[in-house]
Image (cartoon, rainbow, N blue to C red; front, side, top):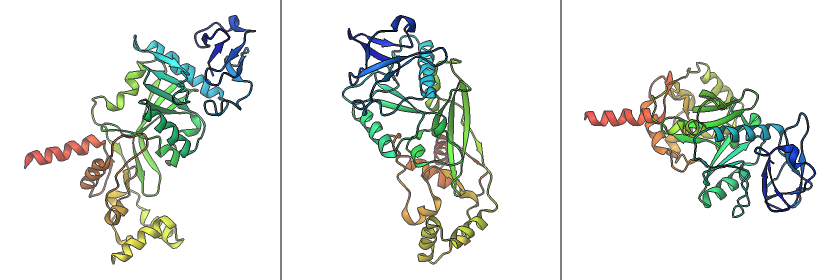
Length: 332
């Protein structure tokens, strides 16, 4: 942690203070009032550490890694160099929530830098607590949580959405000094993912402009995807080995007097997150509700399925499908 309280009650921010002037003094956690020690050396970044976390488990449930501290410091300074008049606070304790966001912007936007894995239940609890008290929360992901070949249950709960970017996530790379936007995230029926990636170097541009970019007016993008010619063989293998997921879907087809292996899936192998085109026929269109997304994306799913009826070589943002059908309607 970078913020501690002195005996006088004054808050000390190590990102703003001269560390040498603070040595030898007593410091306390702003949340639990427990004693914290100043840790500073020639190599290690200066920070405060609890003498014991026993009384502060609700706020500082774990020791922060060097990556977490480094990213927090980098983003704080990036915000400070951005728009004038914007209030950015590091580790502002919010007593009504019993939470301490890494950064608080203009008193209402909580920035959480998540470098370690946490349970889905804990993520839901923290997110809903912020929302209940009128705070928006933005999760930025450290190295261990970067999106790779598949979406984990935790990453699904960290997805954001906009008409121009589709489903997206934010990643932080301390080694490269960059913030990455992974957008237009789509899943293959095998479970792998495809997405667009845009990187921005720390301090290179206004940070709030970057974070708002998924909602800004912009040319619509196009993500090329390839049809999997071996998918039918893969599906046959999954059914042979009685994969529970595929066996359940095949059971629905059998009940309807059909066979999943005879369905032409060429144009429906890549779909937006949360949409399984093979289940829609029997279970209906999913509501498309996600933890970090306040609205349903059901209309996006609907437009996507209406458009993708043939072989697919590319996928597009939700705005593309929305505008396509709006234009078709206007021609009538």
